[in-house]
Image (cartoon, rainbow, N blue to C red; front, side, top):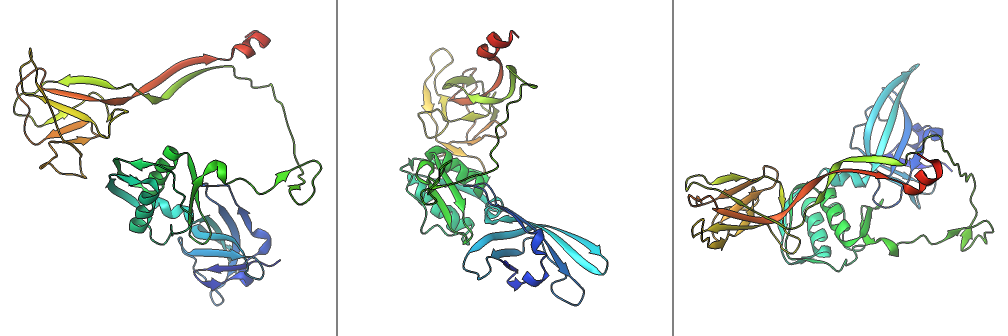
Amino acid sequence: MIPQIYIASTLVSHQVRSESIIIDSLLSRRVDTAKLILEGTNDVGRDIIEKTDEIIIYNDDESRKLFAGLVSKVSKRLEGITLLFHLSCQDYTILLDTAIVNKVYENETGQAIIQDLFTTYLPEVTTATYIDDDGLTYSRIVFNRKTLREALENLAANAKFDWYVDYDKDLHYFAAEKNVAPFNLSDDPDNSATYPYRHFTYDRDASKIINRVLVEGGSYMSSNTEFELPANNQTTEFLMPYRMHKSDDQSELLVWVNDGTDEVPSWTAQGVGIDHIEVLGGAIDVLHNYNEKLLKFGTAPPDLTRAIKVEGRYDVPILMRMRSEDSYSILGR
């Protein structure tokens, strides 16, 4: 089989060293890759291959795409009088890393959000056919300068769904357990429902057993937490002790201002918006900046020790020592 290869819509199969073609096709959202070597001269064929050129590799009669995506790396080398292009390519999934999302959705389904995200930020990837309904409706969800891939990963994690972009630039979004393989492997295959396998090995290595670990780094989410902040009736920006998330039963961070006294507080709920996405005024009394740990008020809170109350959750650093009791009982250490 001689693959038919197009780069930037130009047929280059006759310039490609067929033995150099390596395609790694991975399951679900992981990026497929391809590598190949293309010969060129100053007079024949394309002597300049650009990064981000589209590449499509077909089978010999062009009835099936073996790979499609973009050139991600070009290395030029001279072999005698022949100019060689060593190409590394990635599938269309990498397009999701080039689009930055800055949007708020309210009372929208996951399916509708995904379709709007791609229509707005990456219309060349279509969502008309293969986007399953994940059954979720979001009262409010914010994407603050996230890549389109990060936004999609967030939605997929919430729904326990998986996704990938196929070689026709169609997005597939589906329940992971529903997209099973159409066949099984077997020691006694029937070559219909089951197929053989080879080169299967199973190694057991006890030279580097680890049965006690110190987990340091990462974080877990705290329980719902309240704290209070002082004010002086002049300052409108306040630094919080943590990068705060909303409470687990709320759609946004909760903030109150004390209209009473320190001894007898009277807490008035504030409308909270997202800094750099929303603006003060109307229903928005205070802006929350997650990265800078800031609250930005339109009106300075009163001169009280207990002027502001905040409720939400925050990331708690992990530091934990764990060991395998079963391994200890067998090895003695």
